[in-house]
Image (cartoon, rainbow, N blue to C red; front, side, top):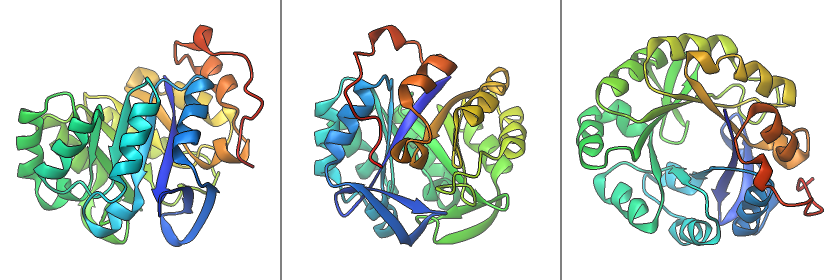
Length: 257
């Protein structure tokens, strides 16, 4: 299972939100590229980048920063936030982003997801952000009546490469992942599921590892890495990212606390 560090971009800075609340953001570093390099040096095999400004505005905003991150590291990058048309998706793929994450359009324009999956096979991931089991849209500012599990099944049928499942009530809280919700969603689809939200410790990651046989192939970790509650090197070794032997000696800083 992959441990995937999250880099959330707001005003060109690396931040973390609390339960998706833009008014409760905390800046961890002014240089997201430096952050990306650090996580890769510590063993990350993939990075998860979210354009929070883009999610709010409905179009990519931090493209220059995303491009700089892609150029700075050698691991695959997945990006979400404000991707609501073909142009936005194609733009990121052209920059070298491996996976583009669709959220709001999966609810509002599911036919577009089908078209993009056909045009960009292997590049389309659907992010399902749930609040009380219902899908949230528009940067988590609105909650739909669509059930997360039903949307996951629909997106799998339409060709999505994977599902990223985020429990908004757990995100940024260090309260542990929603294992029950993840288990239910993973059992409902036959494509990989990546867990996001609430990871606070190595114990949480090991709990997610127990769901690997159901299709939970990765865990996105944000605040816990930045506060030092989770040491990335230890996490990579524990859950098997597969590149531990390539991790260089300690860089001297494991968090931004």
